[in-house]
Image 1 (cartoon, rainbow, N blue to C red):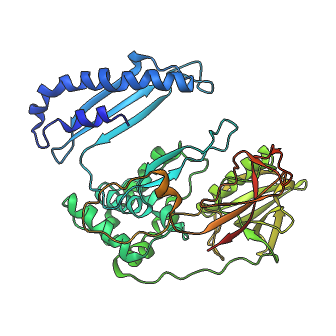
Image 2: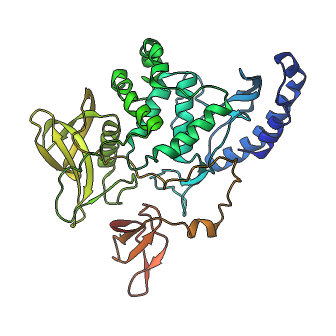
Image 3: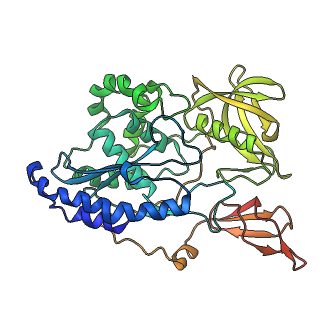
Length: 416
């Protein structure tokens, strides 16, 4: 976000009755003129999007705690936007009223398309623990269906899940800053009816299939017991797999995977994260499955491991032979660990002080700790190491010293 926007927002008095915000309406005009309209030209030139000035709407308002917030909408027209009806809009919320407990982390934006710039697209984001704590706080404070959905999904990413003590520390600080008591499952029980009433209106248009809200509600007791009491969560075993197979957790797939198969895998990932069965079209027939793990064989094939929902039998399916997949509304109780979610960040130690934002220069990125991932070029067979599960390759030479056209590598192994 343009620093001009944030500086203008910060210049509004931190505590002011609603009537006293009126003299600062001039800041709204400055916000639009000095910030958004400069950014608009830059974004339009680089993206090709049409962003008309008269379709930019912003307002500064006072939140329930008497602090200033800014909310706006930016309309655009692009290659895939509708040509009839209203303009599609991006909604922005800016706030100066939030406690950041942990330093931000730098993550690559998932962009598996041919126009991906060399080096990728990176953004500063919440630490996983920060996002989890913020969503828990929001669930206790406003109790909306999307907060329930997000909390349960964050909890189900078992590979990213922080320790209970770290999350409890973040959660406590979030609640203290908002001057609200730490929510418990019992404090949310009275809101269940309203959650069920609002669920369809708030979530149905955002998801391919709306999972039953009761399935997410039933997960809350275990989540709150784990956070507030530190009760250890039972760990499920991994589904049986073939010798030499390695799990594929990243959404960046080898370049040889067809576009149709990529779309099918994304559908299956969504179903697995929400514990929903899938109707899989495979070799000319349809079978209903519980998806668990995507793995790469020693020969380079991608294989989905699943359980047939009708017989309970373990089956594996070659990704290249899948014709289609459809998410159903049938919920399954996982028999094994679900390995189809992307890998998450390393755990961060608890903090009780407001942190300084760390420098994210080149040296900081190249010296970070963690596993090393090895990828083999699909053209020249040279092996490269990466600190992130990303198979994209920079221009390089083959073993004979000539430029290699290969720009993607197949995952080989991980070194810890």
